[in-house]
Image (cartoon, rainbow over all chains, first blue to last red; front, side, top):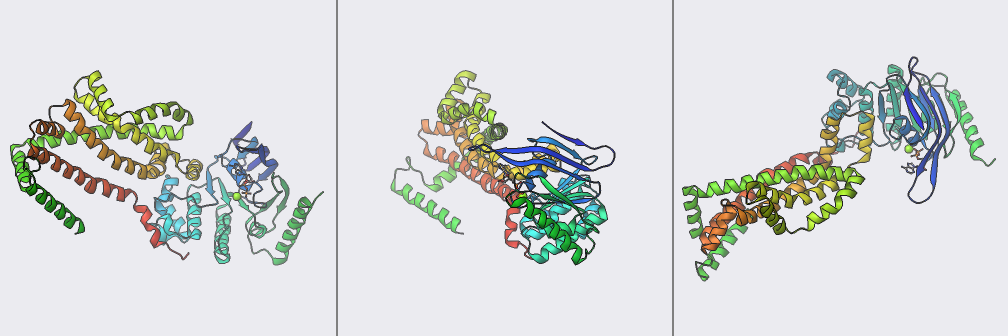
Length: 249
Length: 251
Ligand SMILES: Nc1ncnc2c1ncn2[C@@H]1O[C@H](COP(=O)(O)OP(=O)(O)O)[C@@H](O)[C@H]1O
Ligand SMILES: [Mg+2]
């Protein structure tokens, strides 16, 4: 029993999942999510932070409607147009960068696409094929594709993972700027708390599998150069919560 | 260049073999080329080549279109796969000759029977290859297309077709060579024109010059189709793979 619906009025994301199980061929069911609830106001960026394997990608797949086999309700922002950046870029390898974007966003205007490529530093790569791109560039193309559809909800799955520090910083600043400029409701999944603090308005801390939200933290002055002390305070707070749930009770 | 030398060596070998044996058993190249010229001038060569080629094209197109559709459905749908698999195995193991004779018995010595029998011989092979391709479709890209709400047409054109292209190319390649060989048998058994029919005539008359005068141009024609049509097409659909060496390492 599940229900994905579009909210009327104030657009926001509202997730309430009682349980999500995977059934493997051999053993019994594997519970990935349990009693997971989160709400994200319209125009805000939320970050879902949790250890590897806790069920973050699973959560995004449920929200994106890729997996309907769960118990609970998910209410998407109005219109529910989705833009998603998967953990791997998932571009069509047989189409050029610009064609990848055009195909995913057939209603986008050419000059909008050009502006987007420009903004993400991809203009000179428009005619390249995905195989010719490094991971950092391919991620940006995936981001451009997700933005080109003018999404009501943007889902980012570990957008900075496996990039070296400098590249990760570039892309993180790029994403922060886009969130501030476009005010798209955005849900970012990451295992990196600092990344979450740098990008989000609110942070959802997940427990180890089966994942549930153990705490929701508000970030004051999000994405502005948060004072080092303030950032450290949030980080300490989050780590204390994590300590609390992972030590034996 | 090497191909040319190899071809010249073959001609030379043929010439030597011909000079050592009875010309009625193995006529030399010059005699055969004269015969080809003769048949070409009379118009018989072009007429029969065209008829045979038309049968090849018709049977091939039939087998590929039905084979691709059935193979795709079987690759994507478990129930269809289970349901149709025994039929497929039967068809795969049915000797070409049996299919041809049955077709002629049931549908008469007609064009429909001839082309249908050839298509039916190629069909299971096309199904098997395309089914393999349909099974190998990337589920990650499938998810991506779902999230971005690709239209069915866009999904087919940009997602499915490019992934099936190598399989379709393989089926085309093996299919053409299978089809043109079987077409000759079909013509031999139940048609009154075409290269297969002429070869049968030559056999009845024990006219080796006539036999080779039809066999060689037909082989050359199919080789031409392969080199100038199939291979460039294959290269065209796989051109995106070539970019790997140009990979940019800067960001
Ligand atoms: N398709 C699947 N079938 C079975 N188990 C799965 C499947 N996908 C994920 N899992 C399991 O569910 C858990 C959560 O996975 P995932 O959501 O990918 O974690 P995360 O993204 O947080 O690293 C893991 O233990 C993983 O092994
Ligand atoms: Mg993940």
